[in-house]
Length: 376
Ligand code: MRU
Image (cartoon, rainbow, N blue to C red):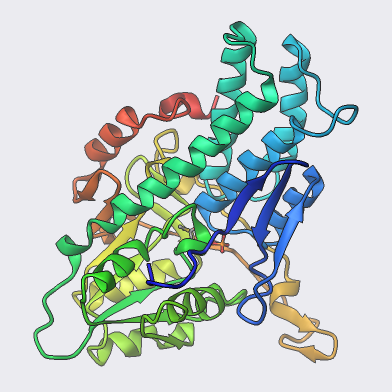
């Protein structure tokens, strides 16, 4: 990522006293404000309100939030013995799991911590306490996600076309699947950062991503700070953008990919995929292995978060919708697998047929929570 610019750290763990530090994404791009959260409710609120957001980042935040509870100062600490520790774990994990339903990375991270704790209860090994064991596992999740982003970035040379003319390669993305959304350089934006670092002349286009504007506020913020040209458009202009020949490829992230390759991602992604097909453009979905959900057979089974209607209605002083009108505010949609050209994964570029490759990736995925055990 950009030379002398500090890398973005969307979420991290600070010890003494234990707290989760997040970059409050609701304040961007106006203000780079960091919050140090030292309570379970604080971490849950930050995830629910999208102060920290993006599938991998909320998995990491939840893992750190959980570990934080078991590292709290003496007296306020969760129990550290046998069955009580598992019962306490379930209470804390339940609060975090209830925050947002669509990104599988969140329950995946909690499951992974649960399994680690169960192993500790069976065999405490070197005598480390549960707080240390859980924090180590949370740090491992964070580290692995950073590595996964780097590996996804290395797919760049298989997907970037050599531009026919002298103009820049036009990349269309949606929402924010960059450093702000992950433990590393991003998923959809990782090949963009990698190509830019290799001197590829590119221009990123991003729709605002109504209603919370993750494209206009966040993707534009993180790309401009490293000097990557980016243009924001209203979401409804992306078809016109393609029709004018300004887009060479589309890359988006994912919140959950079912066993058959159906993709849940930010609302509007499905429209982009249909438009890409109409214009003969490749449509790529970039994701770490933790975003594949082999226990969910198709997109129909993916729970789609519906957010508050206040996000659409505006404020009493500046109404965007008449009070008597109904609203529907789904945060995500499902793109059927047949519209996906390829998945960009840490294992490389995965092309159709997706089912067997997804199975192979999830089977070999090192995380102890992989496979069908993930949703017991
Ligand atoms: O509601 P958000 O902002 O959490 O939605 C984020 C997305 O849809 C991202 O594209 C997805 O989580 C992938 S982030 C690497």
